Amino acid sequence: MTPPPPPIPGHVHLWPQSSGPFDASPSALGPPYSDTQDWLLQLLTPRPAPRRHPLATFFHLFFRVSAIVTYVFCDWFSKSFIACFVVTLLLLSFDFWSVKNVTGRLLVGLRWWNQIDEDGKSHWVYEAKKVSFSLVEARIFWLGLIICPAIWTLFFFSTLFSLKLKWLALVIAGICLQAANLYGYIHCKLGGSQARHKAASRFPAQEMFPRVTSITLRARKGHGDSRELPLSPKG
Image (cartoon, rainbow, N blue to C red; front, side):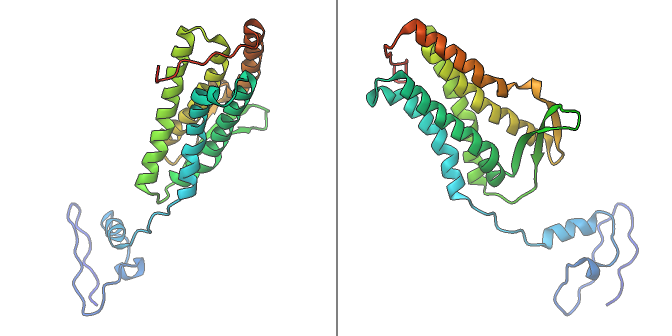
């Protein structure tokens, strides 16, 4: 086979055809020729089929939807404020952990976490990997990540305007936990393939639980054991 001519800047170079099958390997194409060879290799190299994760997709929506349904309809099953509060908060916690550690990595190749450096300072780390993923699962991931915090925000205003203050702590917990994942994954998406570090003080999610507990206890003492159904989207 005749070796290819030297490259001319600004031109696309074509190799002469041969009688045998075309070999797109780097050794067959010879030495690198600017960006033309890289483009040709990417064009001819078959892309792997995206891996599907139906179980991860299911649990990505299950916990956060279950938390919303429990918050709105728990009065149908129990008159206990504490029981409804604990069950909803557990569902929100399970959702936070699964989305942060499992579904984001599997469905869109993104993850974020907290680490302590040698000086004892806490930092948030955001990472994005180039992986093959299903577009349908990626859309489900982002829709669930955006819509559910918006619903909890609506609950916040409805609870605040109706003066259901004892439920305000639970709604704030839902907003904080789900907005934390949204905040982290947006940074992963915008950061590309390079890890980005932010100070933990920018989003003090670790301090949220003691404050929520304190607010809940004060609201509990002020309102007694009476159970009031929060204003739901149904009105």
